[in-house]
Length: 234
Ligand SMILES: Nc1ncnc2c1ncn2[C@@H]1O[C@H](COP(=O)(O)OP(=O)(O)OP(=O)(O)O)[C@@H](O)[C@H]1O
Ligand SMILES: [Mg+2]
Image (cartoon, rainbow, N blue to C red; front, top):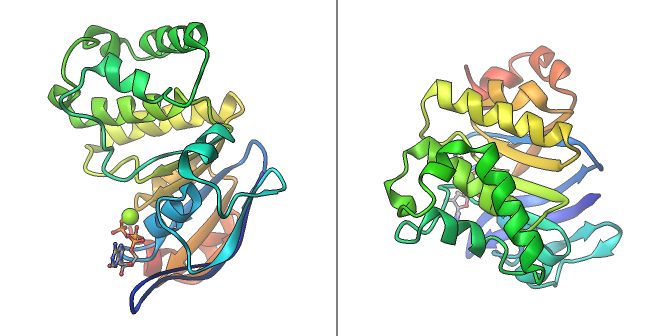
């Protein structure tokens, strides 16, 4: 479904991503792991078009989208939930959800999807009219993911969904990510919490200093003498 070829991201003299190639197949959950500063967010932002790569190609469903605008990538089925959630704190839960559907032209379908997420996350229903900034961290992450899903993506990119959340909440978020996968959504998940990410991952890429260090099944990663500890830890 997604093919990334020799992606290079630079910020001035900083080489954040060095000729990274990766693939995500239909229905797969692929984990992108690595320490702070590895280039994970730069990769995600290059895929959504928020960052312009120095070189390389991004191919979605056999179509080169390297030069396509972010909103047209969303229309093509590629959406991300960025690191740090970025919900609109002063807008209500409902307004945040509706903004996630900004690229859609089917108001009835949008209303239906909002209903679906409210029944899926009862807490969002209880807080529907409340400013999103008043939600707890875990609730905000649920809202951020639900808002991304409002665009009806085929491929969802999640950048550190567990960031700053308590272990119990993290487990719940990953349970939900597992459910999304079971429903057929294709996912690329960036995480520092490798243990959680590997619960549902079909394949793993490990990045360090912008360079790919590992590409393979989760099981083998644990065997790669020390790679797990060296680049991921814990
Ligand atoms: N806008 C920017 N301008 C300059 N340098 C940047 C910018 N964004 C990221 N970098 C640098 O690029 C490198 C990769 O950053 P990136 O945010 O992609 O890493 P990351 O793997 O997502 O890290 P983290 O786990 O901390 O989120 C880092 O050295 C970072 O300092
Ligand atoms: Mg990051």
